[in-house]
Structures are given as structure tokens and as C-alpha cells.
Length: 418
Ligand SMILES: [Zn+2]
Image (cartoon, rainbow, N blue to C red; front, side, top):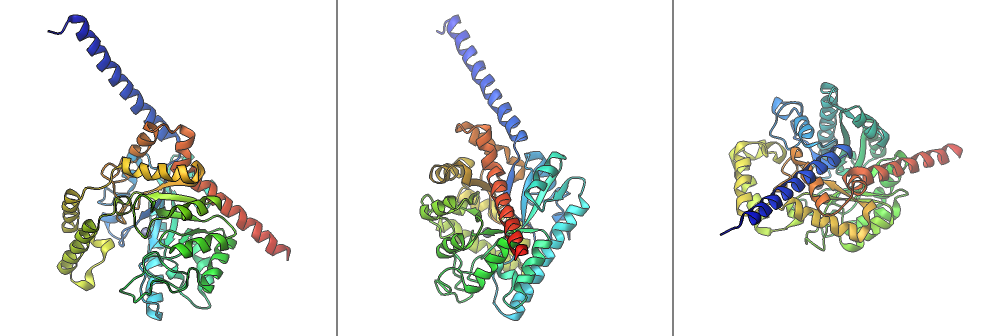
């Protein structure tokens, strides 16, 4: 039988643990509120702002909307103008540009309609200023250099996108383009394993122009050769806006140790991505997704199908829920394992966070923006202090962006002096 004193001791221990647990919770919340949190890759639905269900000012099925950002204390998002690689024909280029323009217009409309809650940032200093005003911050990133086409006006189009607020450009997506080789050659588009052996002569012009403008060069989705050459060609550090660690998860989208080291040595930043396929790759899970997309495609008819639109339909979402039961999602802990690996290899100043929400990114316990506190909790539980957490949660990316901007200002002056 338990003695009275033993019972008291157990009670005190339990109370003590729960007080400690509550303290840890409060501490995580306080730190999460104080640090500026930035997610460098959030996709937007194709019908963003055009239909009420894709208006981020309302309650939506999207993983990122203003309510979820407010609930989760997520301050800043890079909203992505994603355009799939298509045929490099006159029609293909025109369609890509039209798709990009539509998405940029939608992001601007969102910032105008909800100007009391969110504002667009054009410079790193804007991010801190807007957040200090108590608003959420949006920055525009473009995913796929395909959108600028390949003709005499391509660089002017790049200038236009910069004027319009685009602050990073992913050189490629899935499938090679005119700028460089992709990490995922597209058999559908008839790609060879490599087309340019890295960056093309046109790609060199694009990178040089991006440096002059102060636009971040994003090497996520680029082939290894393209990525390493881009680092050398760029006069400013480059970023990987959403990539994983190859040594821990063997996907061609992830970066090898040599790539990560080269990125850190050049002063750039790797934004680890919360995409289960790049954390715990599983061909059976990928196959289940392909089958689901095919099923939904048949349901809507091939012409009507768009992954970005139909991922919000009930039949697609219930299919995803089933897949997640059969092949469980990675957890925040699995994700932070990659963050820690990157920190050990690259140093604390070169690592950040991205979700790829609404583009396939999802973790068991970071399933949308409202659960962003779980990232801070995990970092804190692993012994990172507030300064380190601030760097990981966006401080590093903002520093690199500021360096890129300074290099551009310097290059501008050099040009003026000539
Ligand atoms: Zn992507």
C-alpha cells in the first residue's frame, strides 16, 4: 500500500511537471509572438481571389488564409506565382505569361481588398515595417523562369515582373526550360537527362539581369549543375526557396551535402521544405497520388482538370485523407531533423523554413498556417534560443535578401558611373 508521504511526493512531481510543461508552452508562445516568422513558399489556388472560396480574407479550404495566419502567428508569406513547364512554343510562352500575370494580379487584388490586414513588401525593410504595424506581410515569388519566354523582350519582361513586385524567380520547375536544366527532366516534354549541361547562355543573361535588379535567384527545382553554376555566375548570394536534404531523403529535388556547402559558402540560404515526399520519400505514396489525380481528372474531364484547382474539391481532399492514412505524413520532428542536419553542415546563418502549403506541403502537425507555433515549439525543445529561432524563422532569408538588394544598388551605381 502506498504511504501518505509517497502519494504527496507523486502528486508534487506530477504538478511540477505540468507547471514546467505549461511554462514551456508559454515560453514557446512568447517567443513565437516576438520573432518575425516567414514562410518562403506558399502556392496560391488558380482561382485565387476570383471565387469566394479562394479569397484568403474569408474562411477557406486553403492551408494559408488570413485567419489561419493570424491564428498561427505566421507573419510573412512568399506567395508563389507558379507556372507549370509547358511546350516552348509561341503559344506555350504566351499561355505561361498569361497564367503568371493572372496570379500576380490576384495577389495585388488580395492586398488591396484586405489592406487592413495584409500588405505587400517590395524590400526587406518593408517586411519589418509592415509587421510592426500589426499586419501580415506578403511577398511575391515566381516559380519557373519559363514565364519570361525566350526572345528579344525576355529581359524587359523580367524587369516588368520586378516592377510588379516579384522578388524571387525560380529558374526552373519540373522540365528543362531555356534558362537551365531542371532537377526533374520531363519525359512528357521529351526532355533528355540534360539539355544545357547546367545554365544556358540565355540563363547567364537572366541571372545577370536579376543581379542588377536585386531579384533573388532561386535554385530550388534546378539541376545540380545548374544550381552550382548559378552560385558561381551570380554576383549576389542565391536562395533555395523550398528544398530538402538529399543525404536524409533521396529525391532529385533535394540538395546534396556538396550543394548545401556551396550554398552556405556563397552566403546563400536553404529554406527547408515541409513536403513529406522530400522528407520521407515513398514511391508507393507517390503512386497513390498519381492514381488519385487520374481519378479526379476523369471525374472532371481532362480539359477541365487543373491540379491547383481540383486539389480543393471534396473528392480530391477525401482521397488525400485516405492516402495520409495508408502512408502517414512526416511530422514536425522529422522536418526539424532536416533543419538540424542543414544547420550542422551549413551553419545557423544559412537555414530557413518553407511549407509549400497549397502546393503539396503538409506535415502531420503542421497541416496549415494555423499550426505554425509547432515549429517554434520543436526548435525550442531541441535547445535553440530565441536569436537562433529568429534566424531560422526568416531572419536569415531577410539578411540574404538585403545583401542581394545592396549588391544591386552597388551594381546600379557602377553602371551610372560609366
Ligand atoms: Zn516547387
